[in-house]
Length: 384
Image 1 (tube, rainbow, N blue to C red):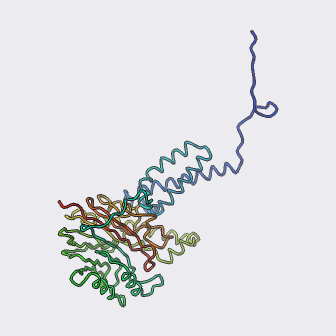
Image 2 (tube, rainbow, N blue to C red):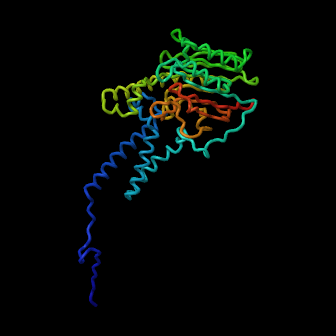
Image 3 (tube, rainbow, N blue to C red):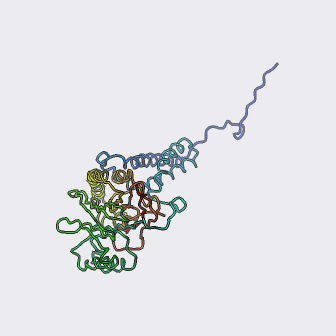
């Protein structure tokens, strides 16, 4: 019996087909994509860790937490590109890397069908607003007290309003005081100030009686004020906070937005180092603040200008055993800081377990300060 051998070839003229040669451009594309994927993946991992690791550990790398949403989107795009080029394993690894971020999306963006439905307030609800008014200066460093008066006169004031950077020395600022007294009523008008270096830095207005208050001075690291208000015979403690600034000037913000900063390496390094150093300063203060919060015997609300994003050590510490009103009841992209292309959420309203947020809003139309006012309606927990 003779043996028969058969040769199969799909190459032209019976020539065996070898492995297709890649073009120079395709090889360069893969190399570039690999470099971008690796760099942004490492940065995203660091961003994931920033809420749980003190800034002093990461140093200047702390800044990557600010760009967490951008990093996440870039890694997602890289994953899609690896899928298109049939690199399944690489795409699979990136998919696994993206999974933890899915649980943090609501820190930045809330889709309507995913958020808590707003409900009507009742007798056990309290409305609260937090607003950094930048000393009542406008974008051109002019006195904007009249514009602030018009803004508040045209809306119903929240039951409690927490101001940061309240400049008592600003000409005409007494009109703000008169406005609150007129709307609350002289018999339902209460306020507390925090004074540093002869200037009011925090002020809290309340239509409910304030029976006790106190300050937490961070010696340049931040300032906090707490007030105990009586709501329907229940005592509620409210923390009004202004944590240490990022020290990013308006000129810095403008140059960052226009890309000019990329042309000045020394200045870029200066900004990065400032952000990192000030993150460390805020972290050292928030540890003290959390000790006071943990000892609070009442239900409480923590609000104010934290000068840090949700992907930060400060937020990670303060959100523990608390809920974020935006995460629970916000809508859309929740930025609160107008510069930097409106990408940063650094103003918050947090509340203790047992309470329930019924409404949350950010007024994105007001351009008086570099910050936006944030407001929420929160229902007190059931009486124990």
